[in-house]
Image (tube, rainbow, N blue to C red; front, side, top):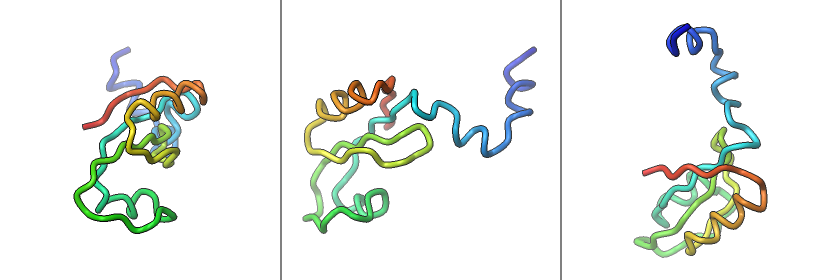
Amino acid sequence: MGLKHITSHLTKNDLAHLGAGEVGYIRKIRSEDVSRCFPEAPDMDPGIDLWALFGADGTPILLTDNRSSTFYKAAEDELRTVSLH
């Protein structure tokens, strides 16, 4: 059974929850894009590089200016990390 066969049976809901509670995504984010992912975050000056940790389903978990903090939070939540570019 190939990967195409397996993925053809997954629903959009299955894909959205794939890795939930197990995988965290770490991504560099610009301050001007923060409100899109973290609507509760205060306004920030543009041009600042920040780091964000998201759950497998895209749920925002942490926003920080320190990349190491994202790894610490992921470890605390027992998430395997994947970096997104």
